[in-house]
Image (cartoon, rainbow, N blue to C red; front, side):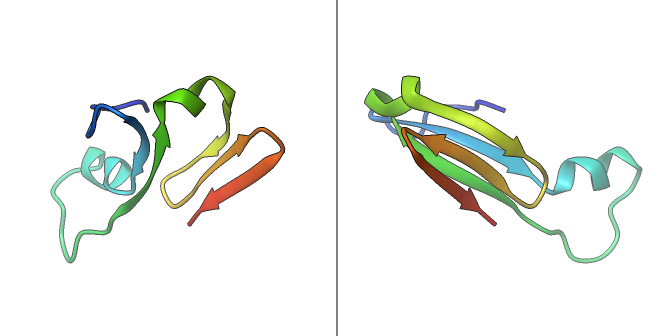
Amino acid sequence: MLSNILHCDFIQLSSSAMMDSVSHGVLRGRPHGGVGILIRNNLFKTVRCLAKRERFIAISVFDIVIVNV
């Protein structure tokens, strides 16, 4: 999910681990987080999202694969 721009030079790609928990009803216990990656605007056209799940995001930039867990 492409969300709000945090800084004019960057775009964020993020995923929340809470989306599935909240959709099933009232949240009980300690909330859990998610992951996000900031991408510089001038590189955004070269970024390819390989996978995005609740607990990780994998992207490729040129010939480099970046995984945020």
